[in-house]
Image (tube, rainbow, N blue to C red; front, top):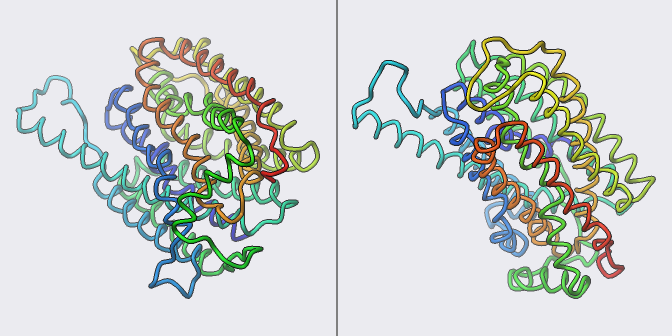
Length: 430
C-alpha cells in the first residue's frame, strides 16, 4: 500500500502540472478563457494511450530486464516525464496579447506565438510520458492486489494522486508570486523522483499463469476477451466509461478561470482553500469511497457516487450566481474566502468517492493477463471524454457564461447514471 501511495503521487505530479498549475499560470499571464480551455486538448495522450498499451503489455525493455517488465517500463516513463516537466517549467508561457496601450510588431507577435506553441508541445510531451506511466502503474496496481483488496488499493492510489494535486497545486500557487512560476513548477517537477524510488523499492507482480502475453497476443486478445465476456453489452460498457465522469471533466477546466477571473480570488487564496483544504476533503472522500465499495458493492456505489457527482457542482453554481461571476469581466473585490469553502468541500469529498469507486470498477473487470492494455482501453475512453469536454469547455463557458455552463455540467451526469443497469460485470469478466 505504501508503494501504491507513492506511485499514485508520481502519477499525479505531471497531471497537476499539465492541468491545474498550467491553467493558473496561463491565467496569471493573461491568456483568454478560450485559450486556457483549449489546453485541455493537451490531455489527448491520456485518451490515446491504448494505441501503445499493447507494446507495454507485450514487450520488456532490454536495458531494464533485471527490474522486470512492469518496473522497467515504470522507471523509463517516470524519468522521461520528469525531463519533460523540467523543460516545461523552464520554458513557460508568455502573454498572447500586448499590455494595454502597447502595440506589438509582427515579429513580436510571431515570436510570442512560436514560444507558446513550443510550450503547448512540451505540455503534450509531458502528458504522453505521464499517460505511459499511467498504463504501467494501472497494470502494476491491478496485478499486485487480491480481489478483496481492490477497494483499499484504489483508495490508497487515489489518495496519493490527490496528495500530489494538493501539495504541488497548493505549493506552486502559494509561492509562485514570490519565487516566480518557473522556479515553483521546477521544484514541483523534481518530486517525480519519489516515483522512481518507489518503483525501485517495489516487487515485480507475479501472474497466476506464470507467463506474460507476447506482443502479438497483447494486440489481439484484450479486445477479444472483452467481447467474449460482455458480448454486445461491451458497447454499453464503452459508453458508460466515456460518460460517467463527464460532469467533472466539463467543470475542471473552467473552475480555475471561474475562481481567478470570474470571482477575482487570488492564486494564494485558491492555493490554501482549493488545494490545502480540498486535499483533506478528498482524502476523506477516497477513504469513504473505499469503505463503501467494500461493504455495499461496486454497482450500488456507482449509483450513489454518480448522483453525488452531478450534485457536487451545485456549490460552484451557487457561488457564481450569488456573486455575479461572468466571463466578460473580473470584479474589483473577491468574495470572502469562507464563501468558497463549502463548494470546495463538497467537490473534493465527492471526487474522492467517485474516483475510488470508478477505479475499483475498472480494475474488477480487467483480465489480469492483459491488464495494461485492457485498463488503458477503458481509461482512454474516459480520457477521451476529458480531452474533448475539457477542450470545448472554454468556448461553451464563453457562450453560456459561468452559471449556464455549470448547469450543463450538472445535467451531463444523467447519461452515465442511465447506463449503470447495463454494466453489471458478467461472471466471465471477473
